[in-house]
Length: 342
Ligand code: SF4
Image (tube, rainbow, N blue to C red; front, side, top):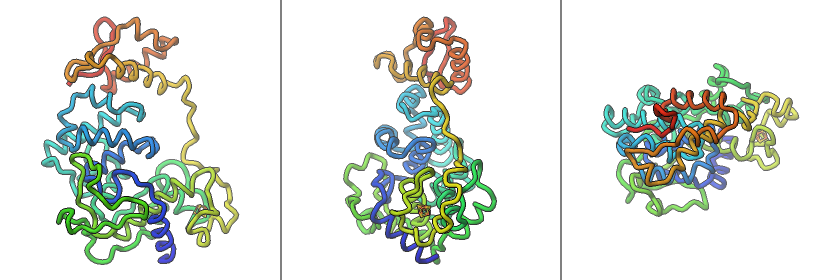
């Protein structure tokens, strides 16, 4: 196992993407925001949204006080916009009940609105440096191939997959509290080659300059396995010839049996779906003239313009009702729509 960890750690240091919330450059709150935004959205697409979001709302308190219409508008084309409202609900709880500090305990994190097992584990590991097995689709796929020689199954992580993730998670040896609270002057960050060590460069307001003295082995493991799954050991076309652990891989040794057969979820058609219609309605509301999307008084879209958005009015009205139920829009008595107040 030790040599697999070493190979992966070396690969991480040479290949990890320079995402702005990595390498100790974001507060725990910033890490949480990145994880929520990255669910169901590619990380490379998230970067500009995250950067603007953190400049505008650098902490939970700032997001908690933001008008809902602004939050939904800033979510832009990240998709699944209910996540934006859940994130704001989370910010309100953190701001009002946790002194504006994200809790540093798994149980407290997972109790927050919109925070599930994966997000809580990711914050504990990536933001706080605690030894926690992070289990997402990429990690499940890599571990299953590497150690069990088979594709991971779809659906929720099985007890077997959880057991494997915990079994192979390295020990951090002694005190795992490796996150420095001493400030930037004496902090030493272990970052991949090619990534700037100047953590003060371009750091938005509210982004931490406190960085780990050295990345704990468990954190290195979580992030390198996850990154390998995103960049090399992909679902359909794993690049085994470029893989740092190909010599150790049970799946490759077995001839890659059933490659891609048990993907977590088949790709969903988008065209014509309710998701597309909901996106069209929200886009029209987000794009109302800036002066009418005043922070406390969002403008409205008249009914006739609403009807012009989608030909099938039965589907359109069902989607509008769904958006209303989700708290993402408001329906006015004359049928006009607007982003929510408050
Ligand atoms: S050798 Fe291929 S299947 Fe095995 S971990 Fe590497 S990329 Fe994945």
